[in-house]
Amino acid sequence: MQPFDIQNRTRFIFGEGTISRLGELAAQYRPACVMVVSDRGIMEAGHDGAAISSLKAAGLRVESFHDFAENPTSSMVEAGVRRAAEVKPDLLVGLGGGSSMDCCKGINFVYSCGGTIHDYQGVGKATCDLLPMIAIPTTSGTGSESQSFALISDAETHVKMPCGDARAAFRIAILDPALTMTQPPRVTALTGIDALSHAIETYVTKRRNPMSVTYSRRAFGMLAASFSRVLAEPGDIEARGQMQLGACFAGMAIETSMLGAAHATANPLTARHSITHGQAVGMMLPSVIRMNGATHANWYGELMREVDPSVSDGEAPGRLASLVTRWLREAGLATSLEELSIAESSIEVMAEDALKQWTGTFNPLPLDAQRSLDLYRSVARKPAG
Figure 1 (cartoon, rainbow, N blue to C red):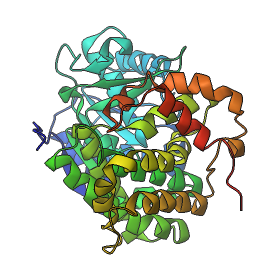
Figure 2 (cartoon, rainbow, N blue to C red):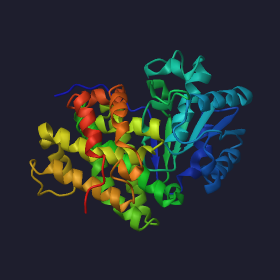
Figure 3 (cartoon, rainbow, N blue to C red):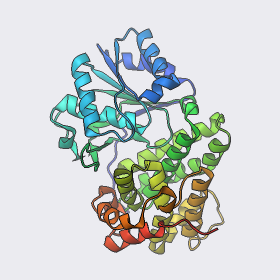
Figure 4 (cartoon, rainbow, N blue to C red):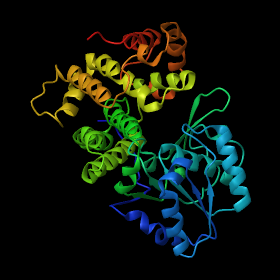
């Protein structure tokens, strides 16, 4: 049995309307200034105003940083650090999707410890305690609220840099499913596929352990039961809550088990072709399941029995891969490079890039050059029919 060492560092508060508690929760840290890190879309949805109102009602001074976008880069983090230097916060709030929460962590690394975000690539690189942070996810995708990692892209090379440290964990995560109901349908689809990929990949990594598989399996069960529901009935608050908790649990699994080849092969699609992460990882996942299933069918069998107790180990990888493909189609997402207008001539360079991704090292089968090529070739063309 794989040994593990894990300490839950984040307090989780779940429930409809819990964003109203932000002020009281922040006040316990006695901050002179709170900086809210949220993107422009969050402002348009009104969540930014709700958070700021709660903070101000608690008598707190509030400043904001909004100048970043999806897949935050090192230059966006630098802009946030400059903003922090102006307003001098002693508490940060990451409000939004994974980009907001990752950018918040990235700013905290550099503002608190100095240098540039590049200095914190890897694990345990913080040189001092970071400012306390509160996470408020408005999507059900990355599970960043439950992780001590920030994923920041280099502004020039576009390579994603995982920056992890126990001190970068959020002190509190407010999980209010009502906040996720303002997502556009495409965002619901992309973030939901991302969450599902986390639950599936964390279940079969080299670092899987009794704690991680518990989180992965429960996450998969909740996400699988609710994903189609939120696509068909966006106002279903119960399904939204299941998606949000499922994404959070999958994030807890990532913290101790990491990810695998689907993420390793997805990252070059994002870096070189600007394919949204949920689309990229969802497209690659079925082929990765089939590849890993050749030797680990029993693991996928355990996972699939969360949704169908009658599934045998032998049929589980194929059934699961087909289920993911069905979800992609329900969500209106592509299942091939052809549908994304990506030429097959780009496969070799992406396959080389995939081998440089940290996540690939945790895949249960080594992601070598041939397997990387085979994975991309398997999704090159749109399936017939």
